[in-house]
Every structure is written in C-alpha cells, then in structure tokens.
Length: 240
Image (cartoon, rainbow, N blue to C red; front, side):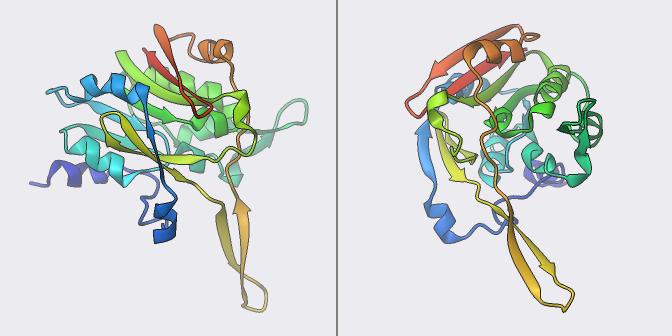
C-alpha cells in the first residue's frame, strides 16, 4: 500500500522547487518570518483527526512534507501561475482587458463542496488579476466546511508596487521561510533555429486592500481576525 505522502503527491498541480529549477543561490535568498496567523493554526494542525487542507500558493515541497508528516491530506494548486494562461484573456463590455473567470474556475479549484478544513491563501489576492479575486474567494467559500479556517496575507500601502511575491514554506508551528518568486523565462526557437530566452513576466503587486476591503471580500464568512506585523503585511485569519 502506498504511503500517505505518495498518495497525496499525485494530487498536486504546479511545480515544486526542484521542478521549477531552484538554484542554490535562490535558496540562500530565503527570509524567515514569525507568523501570528500560523501560530493560531498550530492548535488546529495538532488535530488527531486528519484534516483536508488546500494550499493555493506557489507549490512548496516543505509544506507538503510538514503537513503530510502530521497525517493530513493536502491539495496544492498554484492559482497565480494558472492565471497567466493567455487563453484566459478577454474584454469586458467597456473594452477593458479582463480574465475569463468562468473559464478559470472551470479549470481550477474543482474539488467538491464542503471538502476543506483549512486553506492557505498566502498573498494570492494581492497579486492575482482583479477580475479573479472575488470569484476565487466565492469558490473557496463553497469548498470549505462550516468552521473551516483560511489564512491570507495582505500588504499595507507602505509596501510599494515593487513588493516581491513570495513562495511560503512552513518550517515550524509559528515560522515561515519566504522564497522570492523571480521573473519567469520564455525559451523559444527563432526561425533560424537559434534559441532565444526572454523574460516573460514577474508577479507584481496589483492592489492594496485596506481593512474594510478585506472585510468586504470575506463578508460571507462568519468571522475575521487581523494580525499586524512589522513587515508591511496584514495577516488575516478567516473562519467559514
């Protein structure tokens, strides 16, 4: 019979650090931060009953290992990467560029209703295209159980538009490692067969939510708790 980790690994979408080609110098760039929100969740993660957990940030092998070693089942979807699919681009009635939310949700977050006990959103909402943020939160509401918890990070205005996007790794009950997600590179062959490498994109801070915006975003959830930190980030813990 396969181990819990082997079974769970088949569920993942997105790439781990090894698959994404992380180099030793990139690993050295990781920062460590204390997380009040994660501390609040530590009691939940000690549950003797296996939890069903959804991680919608950039896929982290450390998170997979940390959670499966505690007997929990984890699903991982890199929604930020999925949102860069050119096939999603369309125009609204005003002719403005938007992403097709129906197509996006038809291809992502396909697990059943009321399935998850815990969701890690990390800083997804700050970097995701605005046309997808509310539809994704609405879908998460349907996918979580009553009483389920959701952890999300939001930048404060002082962070600035060039605030780096991070992959978050759980390394302890109150500690995270933050790995910068750099620009993606597009490698193509030209008409003469020569290989051209160009920077395709990097993830930029799209907007800054204030507390009222965040409360409105999660208005269908039963409660919300804010934790202020020293690095221009609000940690938000929401209960379904």
